[in-house]
Length: 363
Image (cartoon, rainbow, N blue to C red; front, top):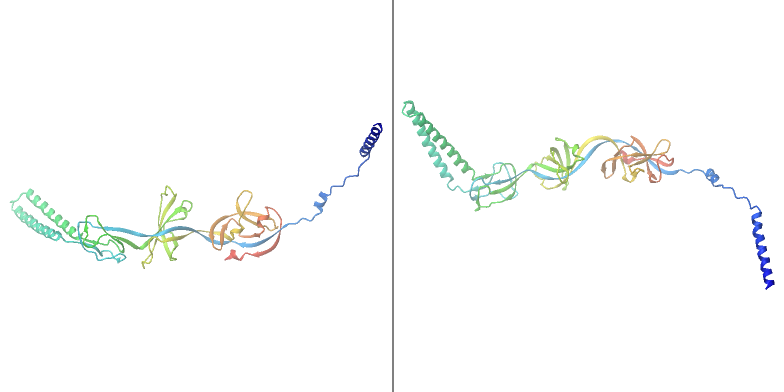
């Protein structure tokens, strides 16, 4: 037992001396920090990008409106008297001129009433003329003359009324147009106000559109516009009405454009795209793929200056086309970064791989 204790004590003493020897001796000097030196000595590398030169062009801004064609005049031609329909010489789709017969009502007693009115007028006229002769001989008073004059005027008015009633049995077209709907047929009894036919005025025609409050300022009365229908018909027209009160729900303003339709081929209700030309500006046509945002969230394009440093140009898109977007906000001649624009930042110097002309921007 004593022997084991002595051996353990000697081992503990040896370990203690070995640990103390490490504290008392100086360790190797630390290695020098060469990280800064490596950074300083490493050659700087710039981002390699590809650029293209873009030239500004004069561009007339075009505002696109979407609407539909409509008849300039629509009339539901109705009976102004009563009677049975005895003739209806038109069919749906017929072209009629102003004054053409649409529906004819029976004569009934209308001719008889006109004959009676004419006889009454002749009798009143004879009485009045005879009274005037007697008045010259002081045989008829002024009151008698006045009564007969009133009777003569009433007879004239009654004749005009009966002749007008006779004329009203002929329901005619008020303007040139196309018969769209027929409401009466031969044998029907027409009451006063019963519609005979619906007539559409097809020349000229209208294009109706609703314009947003952002674009209404570009629309003016008399402005020439071009349009294309869903049937691919090209139209030239003129703005003839611009609303002053916006719709309470859509906040849009009604606009009407008048177009000629001499051949009557244009139909009402066709979807139409209208192009309205406004101001002329200097703009560039670029691919929307080049658009980017800066740190403030502003949309623009990245370019390089004369010292090959990156610059950011905020832009405004003024028109879209199948070949690209027309934008303003760029210098007249600018070198835009076409490859690598998403990997560089403002003020950074870049290596230009190739400076190629942007042929698309010159078309």
